[in-house]
Image (tube, rainbow, N blue to C red; front, side, top):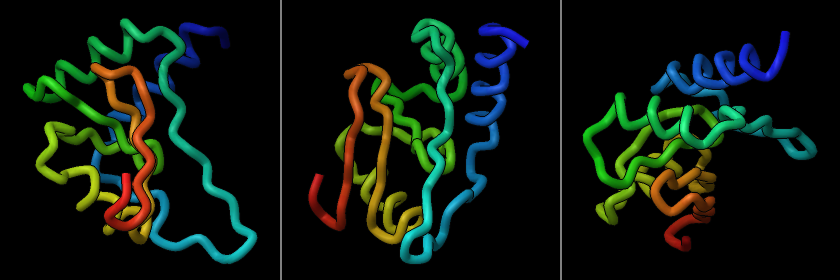
Length: 104
């Protein structure tokens, strides 16, 4: 094991787009977020190979890759994946988007 294997495992976790890790978390439960590769360039290469979007986002709960172009895909996804709560990594902005209901 090493950093390269950890990155490969993180990319493999993201590759399971559409997989739902969380639909309900009981009170006191914990949520484990997907692990992203340590190198931004590796993540960038991988995500841009999956989508033609200029603003890709990764759901940090399930790993699904979305288009964060302002058309509400992240908000819609948060409703189905996290009961209205979402945590997304925005690739081009290199930032995290938190959503709660209609608030971002």
